[in-house]
Image (cartoon, rainbow, N blue to C red; front, side, top):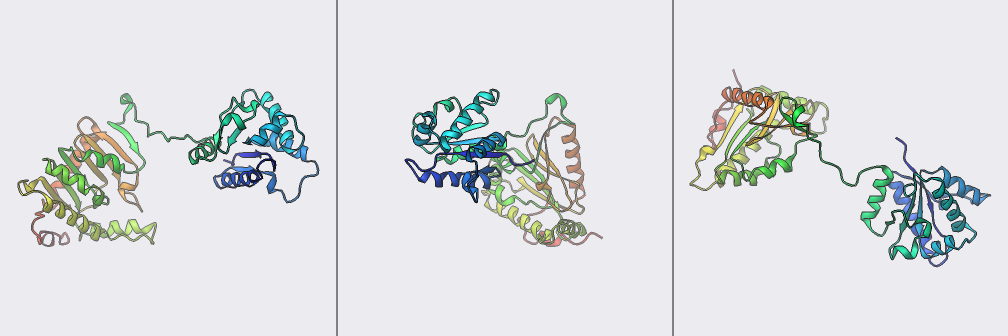
Length: 353
């Protein structure tokens, strides 16, 4: 897709010679934002027929940006000859010719102050952007590029057309949404090679456990052959991004031990259970009560870096299948770990015979 073209009309000199520099700055910023902005100052030599060049520039551009100042308003409304007067005449005609695009192709911008004092009468019905406002500048760029000012959230699948109960698909793991559900959770389950985001969710996990929540975690056994295989597949596409999977698993294990140590003494230590599995699971699972997310183990990137399926854990075929998978992997894993015993992991992590 080619960049939109834009011609900048402004008044040279007059009451404020600084406008010339400001107009150039606007052109430079727009070009830096992906818009093919053109201003007469970019010309190495003045055109032989300035009026014809202005006409062609205005007619051929996707957009015309009018830098509105008191001097521009005076010259354009008073029928003065010269740059601003000629451009105003061409722009006025273009407004009448392009009835359907009126208010879209010709765009007035101001440099602060009262709009009615600087915007010519023939542009008063169109939206003006105040370029002393960063928010207005961003809105202008979004408009020129055809981008919405607010990116809409991902569209949920219609209930009548969900696929095995999948309600939404996220581009990557929705950390904030998952994190926000933890403090009031009753049950949390995590299945992953290790927990990449455990530092970000430690506090809400602790708050949930203090309120009676149960936490079940399944990770890879740090010295299993599968751990070495997973490290190789992650590093294959980007050798500059080395993964120490065994170290990451042990870090996650230590974080979970730290959470257990912080629990008040009256809390049953069995609320937090960890298992170590021998094989790489084909999917990751992050579940908070009925809210369930599942991702795939990608070649060259972490499961949480890829698309995530969101579903109801209590009312979908997909979630039921994932729950069964969690149970089967759990049965074939070592655990639950005694996190309060420092040597437990060392006694239970030999290579599988």
